[in-house]
Image (cartoon, rainbow, N blue to C red; front, side):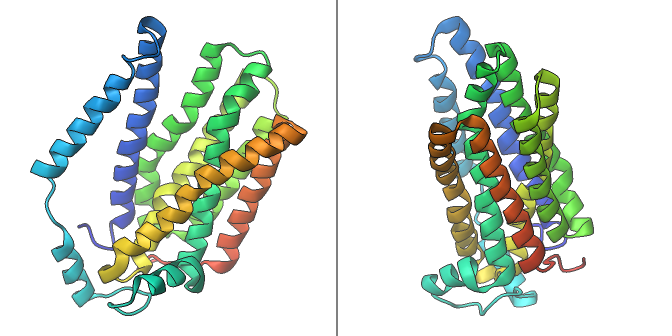
Length: 280
């Protein structure tokens, strides 16, 4: 809908809305659970959101394929032909095309540390003597900064390009995880959680914008689907890997392993990816 020049801004707004709602809902459901019980009251939020989303999709959202066809006729994409098979799209996005494959690796890495954070951070903080309220604040800081930060980082990628924000975002995530693993005390861990949110905000909407820059409009949605397959597989990989390492070597070791993988993801982007923004 917005074209290549403002794609980062649009992705940032979309992702900020989603993860801002996630942070608010996490707080509200926790409040309701504390005062009314774990079931069923907190789940009413999910029912309401599902109904609202269905209603908006049916009655207000309009078909956008015509815009994609117009863009394809006018500009095309940087990668491939307008008509290729789903198998070719998968190979092109996952392995062959440098920017697309680097984006897949970066997305998987990003969500790998996210999966670790949701699973291990509550255990890590409570084991070190923080109260449930303090732990809740630290766990909420990360998605809150992530959600709000995307309002600026998506638009910033339209000005300075995609590659630098993605690579530096992953690097900031890795450093923040290291700070959390090494640090002691609520204040230090809060800085680490904020840093993790900043790094994720730098990378998350920018990766989607980069995929949109490269993929031909005729198969952009399929390429985004492949990218999101790899990206969201990171949730599973992060939970399983960090859980296994934590069982064998402890929580701190699990955080360090994920920090190392995240740093490797930043290096992959720096070496393999090229700048995808058309005017950067």
